[in-house]
Length: 585
Image (cartoon, rainbow, N blue to C red):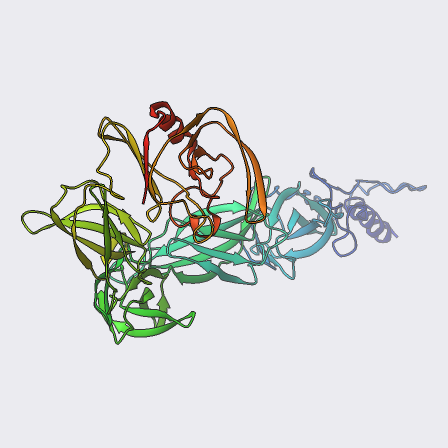
């Protein structure tokens, strides 16, 4: 009996020393709340069972059962580091330090939504083992922010404890642009274009430039532009040079930023147009042209306009000159030249430079002449390839001296010595590359006459009107005073009457009224100098808006009067007098 009581008493003592059932988190049934920010330690209560019959320990036989002390409850340390060493458009790698006393780690995640808010935190992973401190979160959305919370856990003897929370925000990388292409290029610029990414806050452009030896510089950050753009024009470039581009999408939210992988393209600027392209020489059936060297061009292409369209007449030219033969005389021809560079098996043509040239006329026709009042009046036929005519006189040394230029088919010289013979030369020309190119020459010897219509040259003050040259000259005290273009009577119907006239009417202001050829007029003028009995005279004509001179009188001439610019007629009127000679020739 004593032995039985001793066994019962020992069992009661052992039972009193064991912890009761754990009421904290079970290792396999319950985990800490995802939002917990502080350490939570759950310990077993120490309890003593109630008994109605206490047993007295025998004095003679102490228990031989050892008494065990409860093991202390340990809380894992809060992680000191929590970072993302690597990320892509769909994965985020997580890494943290090993925490003392931890047996596993729990990871919770909150996802960015389209409106910028976030989902509730949910557990996404349980990482077991004391030495495993990494985790890769997969199948994520590109360019999206994810919030993570990390807890260290310890479970032993049915008791679970966890650390405080360590938080982290990470963005997956944006997706690269789908397309990157060359929109346009010139000899000074390249425009690149891409498909817009709605997540982009910026686009980052990197550039590499071709060197003289054909190699390329390292890619460097060249430009960062706002995300609302979908292209960029790179200007101030060198002609015929290759440029390489890489473009990345960048999303930035606060301190978070991410760059996509790059999309690449390259392009060459066009060879520049030549700075000088002109006609060097022309004959009756050929035109020789030349141009300045174009940088980086391997060869040149030459085109000529035939029948309204440009056709290639020469290719693979390695020199900057060409003679176009077998042309028609007295004709204008327009040329275009461009440089071409070969690169990586492809040909890149540059921009055109243009020039127009003309062949010399095989027969310019004859130069006719008249002489009035010590002038030589020269006339000729138009030359189709000419844009103007230079007039020369042969001096005493036999050289040509230029005395004037005109765009029309006649020219009135200044006064020369009466009775003396002079040789005058007319040379048609056109412009090529800013220089004059002459297409021939016409010469005529003219003996100078002093008077006109049986009258000697006047003395004192008088007026001369040349209807062919459409010019009025006034002399005061025998010296030239005014020379001005005018419009005389309409050619063939209301010609101003040639002859030696005198002023017999002076009025300022007055009205001119009359009728001729079925139409009438009544106009005010400020100055009037009548010199024929049928109403012809010199007067202002402010209604003329097409100017004076040239061949206006052929179709839009006056009714016989000499229409004169207002400022010029005012000066003429001031020096005029009754009886003043007016010679029309």
